[in-house]
Length: 411
Image (tube, rainbow, N blue to C red; front, side, top):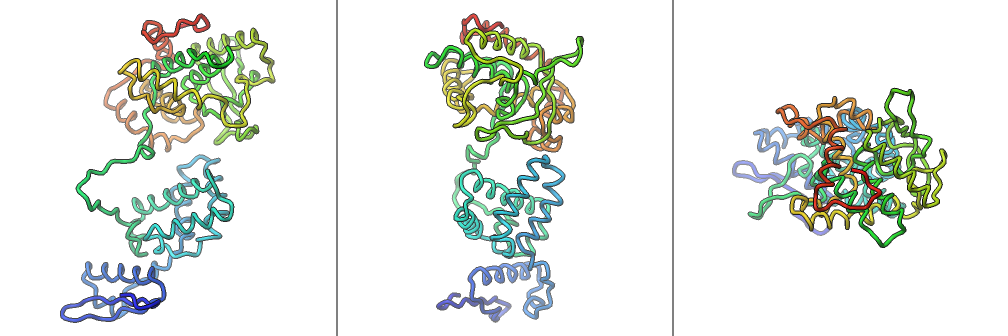
């Protein structure tokens, strides 16, 4: 019950009602109510009323819980750069504001919203605010799945149990929470050729964006890593060896920085190498800088990763409209190319550890997010070698009615 500004609660026993306590905060009263209900379900209501139940763990603070999450889940599974970023954001945006709040306060969304509002007032806007929400969500979700006894002891109904929908509508995840469908080699090549059909830019800019799509899929790089690569990074260690691309820088908000995870090198498939050679020759014809210290992908990045996001979605929409086989590509994003690279290499039978090392991620991350492809390969579903997938896709795209006839592309 609530009387003025004072909140008190009571619980029922057989034939009588006993007073449980008086509280100045409604959240404390609700937490007490949850502990009383749990004691009633366990048949220990008399012990609870007498104060005999051990409630030491109910004093866990949010930061105590976050520290446990960092130790047991984040540190073993996240990449080094991601882990460092999470620690910096948590120490700067979460710990000073809500580190001393009891974990039971997060039984309601009110605590999370209050934390985000305070963080925003202190300068955490846009991506930083989203990162704070993501860190909290990851930690609390891990608590539900792996440390249920801890969150239950702290009265966190929202955290310890997922609420059932009150209506009869079936539950479906929002588009933002569904994993994006990965591209295959034919889809990536078809989108690249659709990018070349544009006529509203300079002649070389559609070619540049098509190269970006091919490299994102063929090399599995992040966009910020690809646009920061210079021609000097493309090298051949020995005469008989494969060409490799050294990945040691990334582009962030118009500045060259270190990569997100670890510096590494990527073997360049022959098909992608041919496209790079063709692009360098075309860039020279258009008077673009192609020296060893110049960027492979020229352009200005003040508003993001060049023009790829701006023109990628219209290209996928055209492909989806022309051919019903590609209808699912209507809402695809450029990151689906990297997902497709990893998926196709898994289905080609390559070791997960080798894929993770070359893509700058961890094997644990691949096992977590690509389990469908891993299960498929275990069930006998297999694709040709990744290099052969690229060549076959180019040949099929030439025969497709969607094929672009521009002479600068060699199938």
